[in-house]
Amino acid sequence: MVACGREGRIPVFSGAALKCRIVFDMRSLLPVLVIAIAAPTPAPAQLRGHGGPVRAVAVSADGTAALSGSFDSSAIRWSLTRNAAEQVLRFHDDAVNAVALLRDGRAVTAGADGRIAIWSDGKAQPATVLQAHTAPIVALAVSPDGATLASAAWDQTVRLWPLAGGAPRVLEGHTQNVNGVAFTPDGKAVVSAAYDLTLRIWPLDGGAPTIVALPAPLSAVAVAPDGEIVAAGANGVLYFLDRDGKQTGELQALPTPVISIAISGDGALIAAAGIRGSVTVIEREDRKVARTLVGPGLPVWSVAFLPDNRTMITGGADRMVRRWDAVNGDHIGAVALGAPEDPLAAYAGDPGGEVFRACVACHTLSPDEGNRAGPTLAGIFGRRIATLPGYNFSEALKKLEIIWTPETIAKLFEVGPAEYTPGTKMPEQRIGSAEDRKALVDFLMKAAK
Image (cartoon, rainbow, N blue to C red; front, side):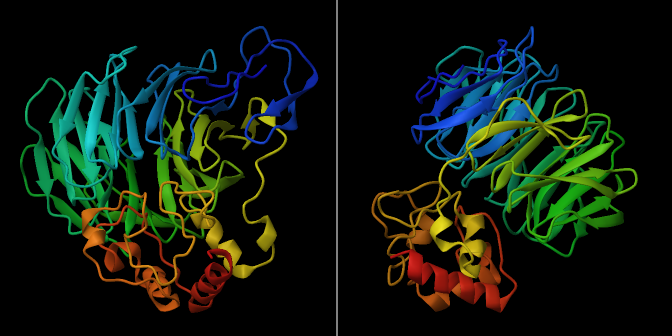
């Protein structure tokens, strides 16, 4: 039923008739009960193959294919009809933060290495590489006519790339990391969202952008088919704006930062994915939370709708692409009734351990576990920033004089990584409670030895 492994040996779930059987999870070599139901065609299933958290997902216009990008620096092209990996794409030197599928079947990947790769189907190397950004790229969007690719990056710019070739147009003005970008449905403007507490609407005829100030750093943006703009805040709030940038409402979608948002093709539903491992489904017209999906992998880094307007896929820290029914909240497909050992099980009940759960996707606590998307925190106290051997730190961090102490770690989460450690790849997150910051520091002093 399952083919396990890495480096192209991607697990594939079959829809063959069976009742219950025991298979082995190759990460732990422990038996896991898997339940499948007889079906004449492959049953919708979860897609496992990445070696790190799934950072980005995209779905083809016809719903038959998906593309995922991971902190493991690879992307995988999936067949959603066969529930199988069709190709593993390896090119980037760092995390693949954003992906897109073009109308002609080409795949686009963008990474923390500041590069964009455009892949022809079946080719082992990208057909085109776009380089101009000077910091991690974190979001992509394709224009309605399919002619232009927009990229948002932490160099504080948005770039518009003609897919037929030519130099990109640069949209400058944000003063901090740009985290989200989307085209308006008529293709006449681009919307960007940034940590600088602003959303900008850029008319593509060359006019000055409309600048909208909002109360929180912005982590993502999406535009509905009728032109309504939805921006996600680091405070867990969704902000609703009309096509001219006038704010028309807001909704507390999650109690913690929203990382990714998606709007169904018919505009009826919004999915807001969060850093604490849940996805809130919102009925857009009423601006009402319909349900919350818990368990898609903590954090949930990415979410996308299929063309049926109710099936969603998510990518999270569990390294899987999961499918969900957004209407009833059910998990779709074969589910392994078991999971890897909880790395924080030994600290159950520790308040600082619970705060640290938002960090486990990117950081380990033991030198034996090594680095993930971020460096291991083992032995962090007394170490100068950006000096851990074996991890590729940015040049900006190497120039800082910070020594990690209880006080400096607390300060990092009080003011946020973007302000305290400019040039970091770390997602923006703050801990507003002094009590929670102290609990986290106390926990690290015990666990990160």
